[in-house]
Image 1 (tube, rainbow, N blue to C red):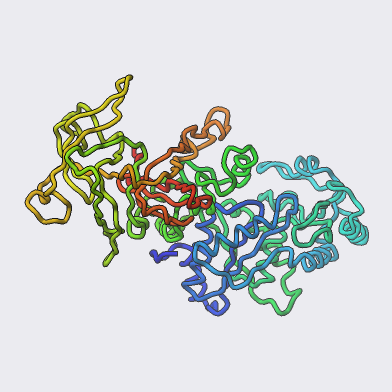
Image 2: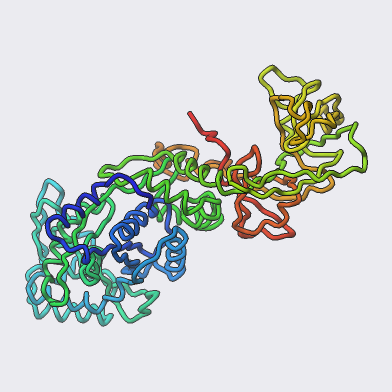
Length: 557
């Protein structure tokens, strides 16, 4: 995470240290559930936790919260690790909540023995009704006063798989009139007869998030447990659970402190793994790493760089209140990075033939252009130049006003790194569509030749490629996946209705020959068009490029 003025989390840690907390005991964790791919919102939590690890030279664990085998998979574990490493971070230990299933079970038995937990045999609907409302106290379960012996017996039978799902749950015995509804006898364990990606069929009962999360923090001796604001009401329960088992293991002495920060909300984007999975399952996108997806793997395939995402997270900062960040800030960050790093190439996306009638028929010149003028001592690349070229169709108008600074009849423009030309004639097809522009060039106006003619100022500069040397490439022009700033906030509440039907257009383009060596994952600036990356499916016989972002924000209000 880039350096920023101290945020409120850092101020909390600083205050703890000033009150005597030993910096050697600082320890953090990033605890994703492996039920989907990480998205840009997770980058904020990653940057915060690992950034604190860097700042304080403290260990940061990568812990997988794998307590729900119904939705979790080893595919997601692998993807999450890849994303964290790609962002430039590494973890001290790779841990899993499932590492602690046996310990969590033993502590649950301890709760039963202390008469702090009981087996409830109500349905989930009955439990929900019995909990009351924020303004009305709940009522005690009819099973709340079961004997300790019966609770222990039923809990063991649950563990042994003797009951169907939903028949019994283990609940903490706290207070059904508590003002915080999460404290009204929360469920600790439920029966799930599913295979777990690590423990297979060993366990038939699985801990709820609130039980597993704080206890795993305690086991790992995490000093500061940082999570998003929706978990703020859970803090009281987090602390109750930890205190209920405090001292049972004399090797543990750090009581984790939970603190909450505002999650990252991005305009024109959804940040729900559940909703993102709908897009994948319905085939509305090309998988979790579709370049239109806000997943880190999708952004990587789109051409966003780790540095640009870290810079974005740094600019957003850590706040206590929810707000929506304009996606244009993320796009600005990747432009800023790629402008310095990406080599320039000339690619014509909508080719129009251009013929220089006074240029020798068989002549092919070797012109040279800098790979990246933003870099010091940047090398140059060789570009062939000949009589017959392609330019962008939008760069020519048969008739144009004074504010059109590109090519029109009788007007001069410069061809990038080449010569000044003037349009003198056009060739149309039977429907009146321009098929070819006839030009003349000034042989003394070659770029870099320092002649009076070459130094002549013209307002327009066009990119181009030769007809005979250019190569065919496929361009995936990506736009925002949603057409509204807040997807789903329509009358029906259906986020799918806000999908942008034009989020992907595919075009066949002509590129300068040096691009033939592009490898998957390489980024380039296509001059005057934007930043593009060679797709993972790109090959020498079929070059495919994904548009990362344009050269400027085309969505400005």
